[in-house]
Amino acid sequence: MANQDYQTLAETEQYLIWTSNEEGGQVYHLELGNITIHFLPEEWDEFVELMTQALR
Image 1 (cartoon, helix red, strand yellow):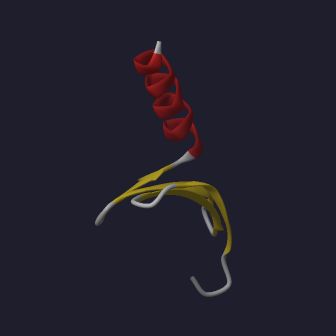
Image 2: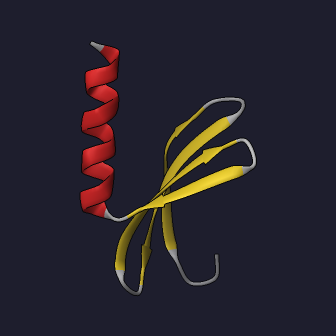
């Protein structure tokens, strides 16, 4: 990740959520084993809402 600012938001033994500031803006990354899903801020907000509903 050359010249990118990034921050780990949450981490377990097998999973990781981190955010990076890239040329196009902030991107959220959800790493699930060997799969990584990238979210733009509005997509991330919707995903968090979805997970909040699932946990109720």
